[in-house]
Length: 373
Image 1 (tube, rainbow, N blue to C red):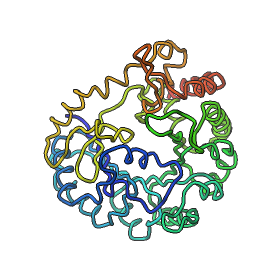
Image 2: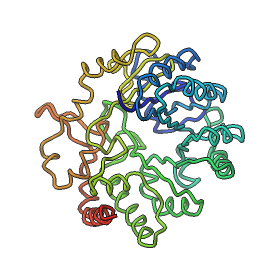
Image 3: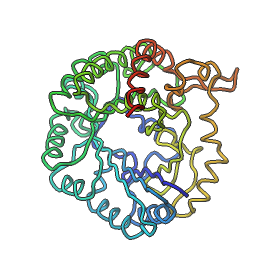
Image 4: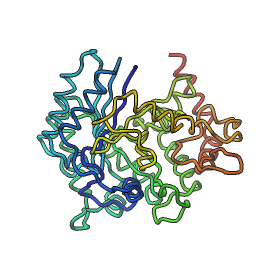
């Protein structure tokens, strides 16, 4: 078996923040057991042992939630120790940690730096926008200042981190201010995730819902700002643009939502249950449990469900589009099933068309320059 990818939820959906748009709260409400509490050390050991012993080349572990830091630093120290103990195939281990930053202190920063964790810090734009969306769970109050302090700490300790921003209408319509603010703070590694509507429900009903038109304008405005800085050699790393340019140059996208077909992932809830994707953690998607099942059985269940194959069932109009080579039809989570055709259509297709109508030529030209290097 080649590289292994594991995403763990050590604190299940437990969180010390309350965010208006939380997709995982929506998923948890739609399954028979909303929360699985804290992951036990025995479950952690079983996950790492069963994946490390099968990995070849690389083994990637990401910790997410909810809020993973609620599980406590000792849990992650033990994770690092077991990764070392069970690395009998001498693979390269990569660790990532997605956090709201609320509990990050000097001790956490020392650990991240020592074990070379890549940290994703969730932060939504300017202080005003962020505080309107992401609230302290207990008090309901503002959270930006505490999270900003965590970013300063990671800077001081030399921790590798990027800013993950959920694109809501408030972020999209003020992206020039957000971009300028991030530049001012020196946040040069950025990831923008389109806000998700509730799973299986009609689009556009929530206050934070992102329409294709608004998302399209966001992509256009952000790329204009980014490409202007690119010409001066001072552009930030923006994951979505880097992947599109890489695709135009003939490389594979490293971001699974830009490959066109779902990848092989093992997303593990706190009780050890395994699911094929963070966006599909419902009862019917369960693949097994690392406390009971071997990786072969988990993969067999994934194949039986047809999870990866489902992502190949993309509308023919999409596949025939001149932008498909780069767009790849977007993330499966944003696709809607059309019973008339038996195929999927991406809700954000009009947004991608708006964007590529404007910038496809520029993206492919940048890709050509990369290909010559």
